[in-house]
Length: 244
Image (cartoon, rainbow, N blue to C red; front, side):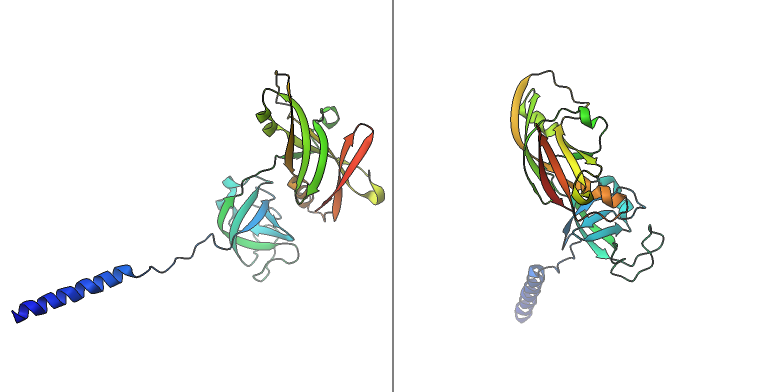
C-alpha cells in the first residue's frame, strides 16, 4: 500500500511538472518585419545608385536581387533592414564603415519587404505627343506631400474608367522666374485606351508625384528644392509649388 501511494505521488508530481512545462510561454522569435519604414522604389536594377528613397536618405540594398521581382519603380513599400558596410562591388557605394555612404546614400540589407497599397493614380513624365493630349483636368485643388489632388471630367462607359486616367507631366525649359523648373500637368487616358461610350463623368482624383523625384534621382543630379506644377485653364496659368 505504501509503495502504491509513493507511485501515485510520483505520478502526480510528474504530471504537474509536465503541465507546468507546457504552460510556459515560448521565447518570442525575432520578427524580421519589426521596425519597418516606408520607402519609395527608385530603380529595379541591381547595380544602380540607389534602390529606395526615405525622406533625406538614399538606400542601396546589397541583397536587392532577392526582392527585385516584387519591385515596381515609383511604388511605396514598407521595409525592415539593417545597415551594413558599403562594398565597392555594389555600385559606387565605396568601402565605408557601417552606417552608410553619408551623405549620398546608405547601404542596407533588407530583412522584410511589403508593398503599400497605392491610393493615388500614376503619372508619366515627358510623354510623346503631350501637346496633342486632350486634358481632362477641370481643377487642380492642391499639391500635398507626394500627391496631387484634382478634378477630372471624362467620357467613358462607366465612372470606373477613371482608374485608367494618368497624370502627364511635361518639363518646360526655363519657364519660370530665376530658372524655376515648371512641369505642365494634364490628366488624360493612355493613348491605347479607346472608349466608344459617350457618357460623361466628373470625379475628384489623386495622382502620385513620385515620378518627379525619381527623375532627378536617376539622373544622379542634385534636385532643386522645389518645382512648380502648372495647370493651364483657358488663358490662365495656375501654379502650385511642389517641394522635393
